[in-house]
Length: 436
Image 1 (cartoon, rainbow, N blue to C red):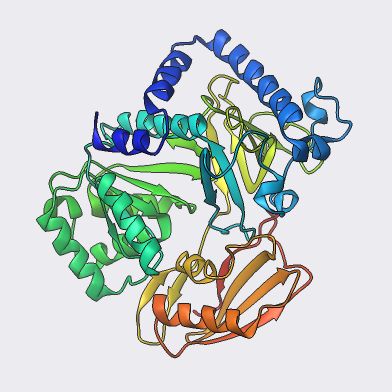
Image 2 (image 1 turned 90 degrees about the vertical axis):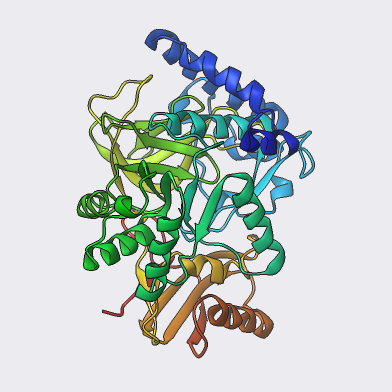
């Protein structure tokens, strides 16, 4: 067994069983695939009505035979301790527990049962294979954040080792550091880049200034996968030119896994193997293909925690060429993060601020929402909605995190609010910079 598969198996995730299940799903013709989706949709809601008191209470008197009458579930609805939301028979010992990044403004802890988690990874492996990439053997250059406290840091580094990837820092995107990155590519056999769209774009712009095509430095490169934030058309063209490889759009979230992935025909295919994706208007009516609305998703396999008609807070459109068995994502709005510029001249990806705030959002039942704003190069403000005000000790912790992740000497103020301003998409943008 390959190393990545083995690491999943050792953690208790039935990857072999999941791969077989995915093989059988992919073998279905269009008609059978549509019936499969409808059947799994009905099965998962019946399961949670029987085994999940939280969801049974949430759904109330809704007619489960009428899918349109089932209420949408938001992060705000889930703002209570995980133990209140997890299904009977599941605990931290027999499922995957994780936290969302809080990029939507709502930090959230959640659970995935072991088979559901394994199936999610099987789908990632399948989609990567479309571009001749193998999670077990293709070396990844990862432009992603990493916690800096010792235990979490070494845990992530171990995961990187088992996953055959090397993590480049997004906390320092200065020319000096990016020059070192180019040298590392020249000395290694990376097959693909993976990371935040914002960080990859900063790297691409550096390469453009220096007149460097990355594939000339690292001939083993095959592709680049951009994730987590919106990748604008012009930025994608820039990256393809400066990296010298195709750039693939990935759309996913921690709670659900892979939502959409671009194939070689440049179609952004929705994952209909273990998810059911809808586009709804403000009154929760399903919109026709081609019309823009709220992206609402049902996890067809997660028995540990209900994600049924789950509203991500994103806005998108399904292509008019979509079908139930083959939905295609035509557009995705939102999910952008600003670039972070600092007094020393250092530049970092805006998503860095997630790692700063994560120092105090581990207990999501206390901090409901948060947003960070940059008013000057050295001046920041944390606005938050919480049951209780941050303690002085928590404020000191955040200030220390700013020193650690960014640079010393930054000023930060705090304001507790009843609510935060929202974008048209309904999301609170986690980080906003007013510095030109």
